Image (cartoon, rainbow, N blue to C red; front, side, top):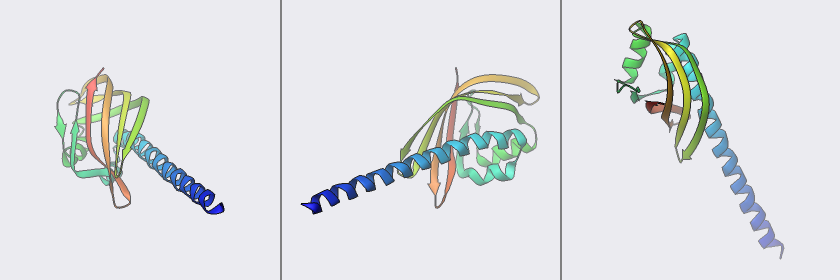
Length: 143
């Protein structure tokens, strides 16, 4: 009689550990997504480059597409600069080694010295590469 109870308890423990790992990974990526904007504002391109996948497609709300190389170069050259990013809502979904972040935020900065202030809805796709999470894709639309 004790063996079935032990098996049930073991199954519940395994499920709880799995759920905690999922939640921890999602929180880790959500924190990373927020730090990414801090690095973009501060032009910490070394930190930023470490979390961008080599095949990144960063799609802006106006259809402009940047690669990892473009994104870093455009920050360094001041082609684009961010002054403030305020995230108002964010949610995550996890699929094996992929976490999707769907969020809303206000973005303030300049493109070619022309100011912008945009309310955006954006989706970011992070993939697990060994022990690190990398931003592989991002798409934004104006609200």
